[in-house]
Image (tube, rainbow, N blue to C red; front, side, top):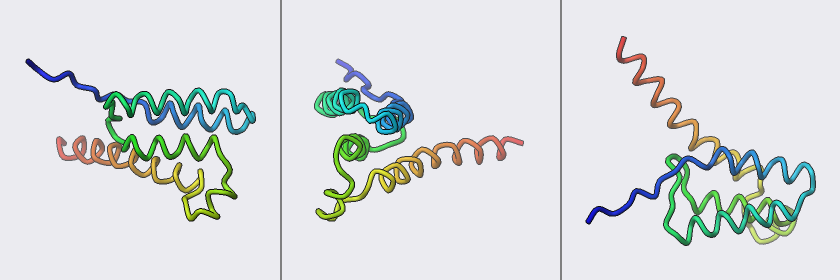
Length: 103
C-alpha cells in the first residue's frame, strides 16, 4: 500500500494571511491561522519548500508579542519571515538555474 503524499504549497499563503491579519490587528484570524498550522503539523503535512515547524513558529510569533519573544531569546516575526522567504527563494533560484542550463 502506498503512503499518501502529504506535501502541499502553503507557506506563501500563510505568510500573506499572517501579515494581513497582523496589519489589521485581527487576532481571531491569527488564532484561526495558528490552529490551521497546528493541525497541518499534527497530521504530518509538509510544505514543498519551507519547514513546517518554521511556519508554525511564524504563526505563533504573529499571534503573540515580539517584545515577549525577544525576552525569551526567540526570533521576531520579521526574522522568521526573512527565514521563510529565504527558503522560498532557494526553490526559485534552482528553477532559474535549471532553465538557464537548458539553453
